[in-house]
Length: 407
Image (cartoon, rainbow, N blue to C red; front, top):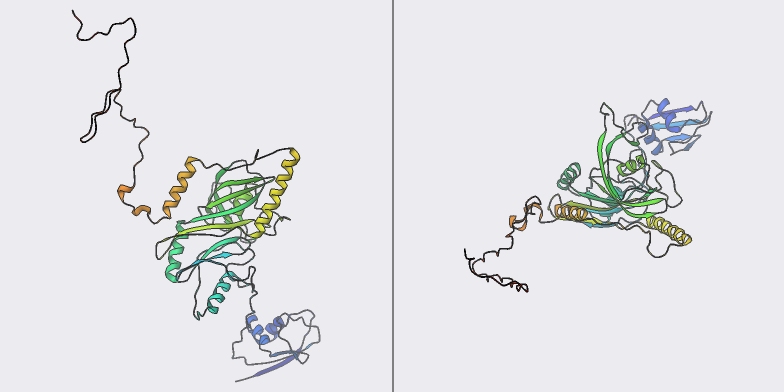
């Protein structure tokens, strides 16, 4: 091992130790951090293990290292994320559904060493005794969005999940608190979203003659669940799954999600966006069974709703309103009921493979039913003769005439 010893004095104030080693020793930043973590760099005779240690002009530096060895920085331990232990909602050998707490990243990032949900699940399985456990990412939730999230445990399940999400063959229901009072009770938001490279924020593309590069179609269905003073509680169903889709589209309409610091503004009611992935329904990518998993509304959103409802009661009391007068209650129309049935059938075990005789055809409204215009219907074999209606008695003063009239 050819060991290289080098010593010198720092010339300027405020230079980071890793930057100084990178410049003087002509090594990469990663190699410089590795040398520091290995304890081979000394400042004024003392070993320093902090890459960001600020030097002063005149500090004496000494480094002893092997130039042929590849040094790498020691990875920092990730912090434990909010929510404590992972809350598993449903799992088998192919999939795992978990309840993601708000404030926790879905996957790790290269820039930071923050805790993430994927690492928490991996650590959980290793504590269970799985030495070689692999977790595959199928989709993500925003950092400050809570709710149901599914991961794959096998490559086979991962491929199936990717197809489901790409083709939008799944049921995703969210609950959100919006700032402002929506004028309609239900509707659909349709538009194209594009990501800005500098800010990484999403925005709705305004219709133009030319097609915007990178713009992707986003479709969001919603219905009002509750109306509160200055706020609206909505249930949202995603048809497409773009990044920040719900937050961007509602903010573009002028009704941002409560507490959204990126597309709206902060709130004293909640310290993050009031958005929760309440339900996720899919067809199992391996077993083909129907799976619907839901997660209850988190405590912070319940607290915000309680505060808004109390404010509503105070306003009603001051106005002298009693009972349930003026309280909004969503109505389930016939069309919505049929839509629910159709959506349930897509995720049921019967589906399109149901026998043909079980599917009754609906009568065509354009075809009128046949009528006999008062004549009795001929009886079928084995069926009793239809009873004839009794004749009405003849009116007084008018004799009953039988037989043929005489000529």
